[in-house]
Length: 194
Image 1 (cartoon, rainbow, N blue to C red):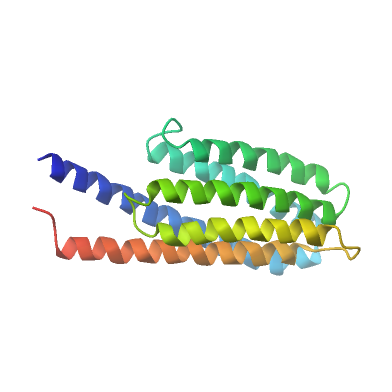
Image 2 (tube, helix red, strand yellow):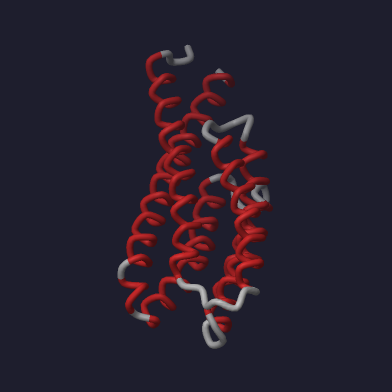
């Protein structure tokens, strides 16, 4: 009986993560499309998109942590919510200076949020599928953050397209995880645990 309960809890958690990863991928794809079209022609729209990105990450982590047992068992997500909220404010301030400042701020955030995402994925490794892609995503985010900080110090002015590339890679990893979980759930459906 307890095995059945554990199996059902794992399946329910994987079902939630599958939906969550699909939503994260869809948001990122839409954000990239808006950044590469509207954001290229209007600084005001680019600014709004740059503020929305970390704010969305904070909100998404709040919802995921709540659905996955709360912040007490998801400390890395609690820290990520804090980091993303601070980043939202930092982006607002950096926008008053230059896009290089914005890119530098995004670089710091990409390092912290990437490492925190990696930590969350490692913790979920034993209970949920598709975490290898989240581990890769977290590691690559941290590396991209270092590159952003380096680029921010160069004299040429950066644009939102630099961040759009980063968001596009994130969308890919969320989509891979969602598809991986969909396949795993489908296989479990064909071979239910008795």
